[in-house]
Image (tube, rainbow, N blue to C red; front, side):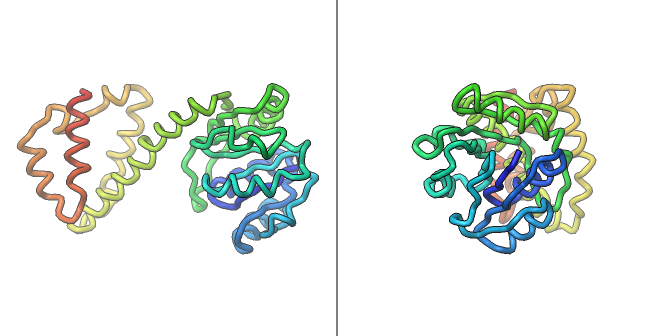
Amino acid sequence: MRIVLIGAGRLASHLGPALKAVGHEVLQVYSRTQESASSLAAVVGAEAVTDVASVRKDADVYVCAVKDDVLPMLLSQLCEGREEAVFLHTAGSVPIEVFKGHARRYGVLYPMQTFSKERKLEFADIPIFIEADNEETLAVVRQLADSVSRKVVTLSSEDRRYLHLSAVFACNFVNHCYDLAGTLLQQHGIPFDTLLPLIDETAYKVHELSPREAQTGPAVRYDKEVISRQSQMLEGLPKEIYELMSKSIHEIQ
């Protein structure tokens, strides 16, 4: 397929090379900044553009990998004159209806993974959740998704909202806890990698046990003395997170 990437951020920086690797032609990379557009365009062999008016009109698919609040504004400019093309967004929490009134053919291609430009990933292992305005468009979206991933699932916008929310808990909140733990360790001269075996085992366990079965620690038995003492140790860190999490673990267990 002939593809234009709208956006050159972390997700696009992984998706673009994956599309090129399986034979799709990435015609252009659009970004608001020349540096980011040129950087990704060089990798995928595409033209870099920073003006929406310069985006080509002959692509089969336009993949919009931009911030959620930027998407509606871009669509009002992008879709005109491209009635036969398929427009896709890659967001977990944006409904498919964002395209209504702008595009004639549209859908969603949501790779559920945490992306960092510095980290290489095997894109084929990333599950992709898709949706489209009708069965004909869905077939195009599935063909595109199947070409880069071994796991493609059709999911409605409503269900995708909850999938994205669960990912926030499983990834973003957990990573914030790593950051807090790292800050605490740094304050006492202990290297963060001391925690890596524990972090790895915690992640591996939920491949075999449910998260509830895998839970350990003072909050499970709600050891008030330990919880109170540890809470007081959190100088300069958000004690309320520790206390709320401990209470939640105890109540759920």
